[in-house]
Amino acid sequence: MSKTQRTREICALAPIVPVLVVDDAALARPLAEALVAGGLPALEVTLRTPAALDAIKAMSEVPGGVVGAGTLVTPDDVRAAKQAGALFGVSPGATDTLIAACEAEDLPLLPGAATASEAMALLEKGYDMLKFFPAEASGGAPALKAIGAPLPQISFCPTGGVSPNNARDYLSLSNVVCAGGSWVASKQMVENGDWAGIETLAREASKLAD
Image (cartoon, rainbow, N blue to C red; front, side):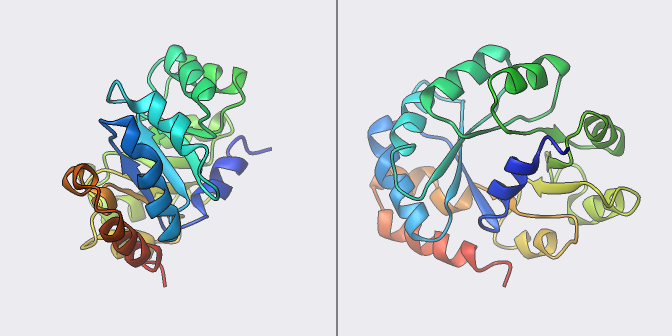
């Protein structure tokens, strides 16, 4: 039984998973509403700011949204994310301790891998839906295509340097379910409360796999 079936289902909701850095929790709900309205229901809030957990809490109340916590590194991160209402977790890499914490909390995990060895080690543990990170720095779509050839049973969500210019290169690969991108909700747009602009970018991103 794949331990990542639920993660795979979440990744399949839309071609792009917005990777969000939220500095002000008061902006979290309207941000989530704009992204969901634009057709991107799966949202990754990175635990890189003091407001992140409150942002997850606020976003988890938005109808139609599936909110996860990104940048999970320690078991404490996992517990805090779950408590805040995160429905899935994303990590830059993977350790046995982190995986055990996610399994103990019943939090579906999208663990990061950048090499064939890392991907194979996670597959051994039952994880066949992984984050390819950092995608562009690790060789981009050609590298991911090459890793996928001998490991067709593993699917990926490339994140890190994915943009409107290269997203289709990734999404056209048979081993890519979705990609993580931050351009749909830039820091400037969020600070300006440009929810209509964010919804428009989300709508364009939701059609990238067409």
